[in-house]
Structure formats: structure tokens, C-alpha cells
Image (tube, rainbow, N blue to C red; front, top):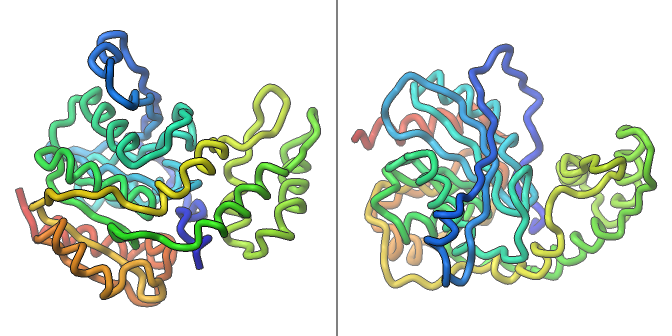
Length: 309
């Protein structure tokens, strides 16, 4: 069950024509000076923009552990059509095409999002995060509530996630993958799959992880920063302590087949997010948006419509 707290495999859906811009931000010297003396320097983030005609605050998607911005591409395109709003999908630090850092905490990832929104001159957004991305979204909303028009946390709560040792075995298997230089991608993928299969036997998770295999200077490597993730697993499985609350409209959206949002979590959810709604989508597991994409989209659209600006 623990290995499902990852993100989700890319959808097979392919949009024929999309107004999409993929970019990676950089940090200017002035911005670096602004963060001088702080414990953690924000890192540049890679993102994709799915353009929409509305001037309402955009939807910003944050993926789960070992995921990337591409996880939400098909959903983003459909949400543009249904809401008219711009949709941005973002790679977290140490994931996708974003920069790597030895630090991997929710406070650090929240600071990355704060800088990211400032650089794009976005004063407000609807923040939607799945799993790890949901915890990042919660931390951000608690730190900068004025920036978050409303918040959606997908199959995650502000509580401790258990069984860290399972993830450590999982990461160790990825680190142990050995692929020689100069071979085609199909061969490299097959070799990685064969080496991972004894440890990771569930096909959905295995194929999802293989999306992180990339070619760098004729050598296939993992694009995720396994060392930083391994060193910070306890941070990623826990949640920072807050005495403040986010008062804006909030939706905790779980899967009926998942146990990541249970009645045991409700008191802490209500303490930190007093205006929270808690819903579960039928026949969905941890990957709610992959298991039931249309129901997920409908629920997001209804939540936005129920809480107009």
C-alpha cells in the first residue's frame, strides 16, 4: 500500500492540439540576494502552461513522489476547456526537469512554489496537490494563505505516513540498477525493468518508475535525485507542525479504496483547514485522478463553481 504514495503513471490519452508552453525558470542574482541568510535557497522549477482565456487565478498542479509535471497533462487540457482558466503543472525540486538540491523538505518545496509564482507574477492561484504535492500545497497555504484562492489535497492528509523502510528498499533497488553506456533506450528500459522486478513486482508502480529513466551523455540514469529523497524520507512521510490555519475553501479528495484520508485524520484537517470539505471518489485508489479521471475533473469543477471569487 505504501508504494502507492508516488504519483501516477502518465495517462494514455493524447490531446491532438494543445496550446502548451514548457519552460524552466532560473533564479536571478537579485533573487539570490533576497534569500541570503535563509536556511534553504529555492531552486528553479520546470513547468508547463496550458493556456486558457479566463483572467481568473490559474490552477497549479503539484505531483507526488517520483512523479513529474507530465502526470497531469491530459487532465490539464480538459480543465482548461471546462473552466477557461490557465493550468500550470510544475516539477518539484529533484524531480522531472527541475533543479536538484540536497534538501528535500516541505518547507523548501513550499519556498520553491512561492518563488515560482512570484517569477510568473501570479498573485493568486488554485493549488492542487497529490500525495507529496498535496502536503507541499498544504504547507504553502499555511505559510502564504493570501496567495491561495482555494486548496485541493488529493488523497493525502496532514498526518504521518508510515512504513518508511518500504520506501528505503524501493530506492535502494533503483540505485542498484546498472545499465552500460551506448545502448538504445528500449534495451536500457528492459534492463532496468529486469533489475527492478525482484523488488518491485506490481507492474503499475514498476512502469511508473521507469518513466524516470533518462539518457544523459550516452548513459541512462534516473532523473530523480534518489540520494536527496532517501536522506529526507522521514521529512516526506511526516508533516511540519503549524499553529496557524488556512481559512480559505479547501477540498480533501480521497479515493474510496485508499486509506490515506480516514476519519482519524479529520480532527487535524479541521484544525488546520476549518473550511475543509472531505470527499471520496468511488472505485478510486490512491491515484484518484488516474483511476477516475472524469469524476476527478467534475469534482474539481464543482468545487470551483461552489466557491466563486
